[in-house]
Figure 1 (cartoon, rainbow, N blue to C red):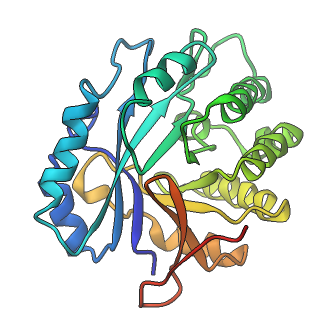
Figure 2: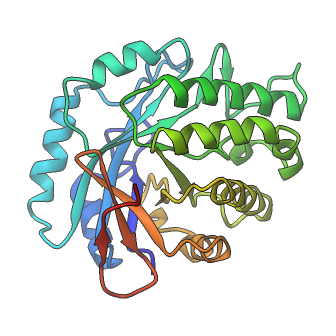
Length: 272
């Protein structure tokens, strides 16, 4: 079973609902061995909500609250919402601090909110623009370990697998950039209960592993307790279908491979 949830949000995120201690208690109840707190940092976000205010205090909250949960490996993370315009500023803000892992996410670019399709764009054109922005960021950002939710546009708008397949060359470029830079791909489980989202992530994982990729993290993207570990049974189906029996976790930005197919926790160094 999957025992690592590496995408969790607390009250440090504008849309988070839970304090750290409640999150950690719930993860212990659900028998997780590894978790990552990855609250939002979205500089210049069109909504005006930029996420974590005070990274030093945020990291201290994770560390000090986590001391009460010795059976849980709690990773210090951040979900950095980046684009061409805020990339430099985001890296400058992150640089002085010590994280285990940074998620790179594309929530907005230009004047576009990825969660809302502009009226003047068709579906394939929107996915193309999103993937072009993603390719730029995964190729130029230094301080990240994981590309989060590549299926993000389909979370809020009825994009289809066909929209992604019409941009297969760009998807491949993104995945090759991750592999060459030894960055991981996230299997985000937030919408895996929706058939089209499941198909999109299945296809992305198939392309990733076909290209030689194997560094995959799993995260529920939970903003409330009941969402922690959601749809992990479907994630296991996807991992099985592409022959991945290990997940990637990060400690002090260094990747480790964690077996999810056995009941014992097995950590090993990744392939070189």
